[in-house]
Image (cartoon, rainbow, N blue to C red):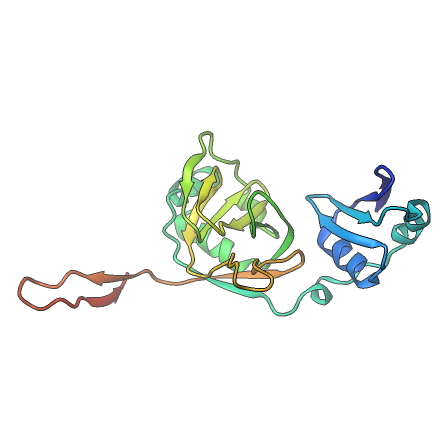
Length: 219
C-alpha cells in the first residue's frame, strides 16, 4: 500500500485490495474518520476538520489487512437465466461455446471491490480471464435492472434500469437496490458473490377456449 495526503482532510491509499483496506480502516473505528470510499485501486479516507492528517498516515500505512473470508459472510447467490443479448457475441470473442461461457461465469466466486456508476452497482472481481472482453462499441440507451453483465476484468449486475455498454450474459430477479432496505444496496465492498444458472420459466399461451390460465413451463 501507498498512502498519499489529499489536502487537509483526507488520505488516499493506493492498493490492489481496496475492499480489504476498506474493511481494515472501518474496523479501526477511529472517531476522526468520517468517510471510507473504496475505488478500483484506491481507498479515500476523509477526516474531521482539524485532524492531524500527518499522524494518521503512518498508522494506515502499516495497517494489517483481513483475509477475504473475514471481510464478508457467506456469498450472496444470484440465480441467473443465461439468455443475454450478448452471450453469442461473448462466445465469439472468447472462442468458447455458449455453454462454456456460462460454465466459466457461474463457476467463479466474485468479490465486490467497490460501488460506482449508479447506486448499488458493484464492480465484481474474480472474473475468469478467458471472459475478459471489452465493452460494446455502442452502449445501450437502456439496460433492464437485474441484467448480469461483464466488461474487461469485471462482472456486475445492474441494480436499476440505466444506459450501459457492458456485455449482457443473462438476468436475475434479485433486487439489488431498495430504498426501504437498510442499507439500500444489497452489495457492499467485500461482499462475496456467486451465480447459479437456472432455466427460464415462461407461461404457455392456452389454446382458444381452454380458459384464462396458462401453464408454467421451463426451457
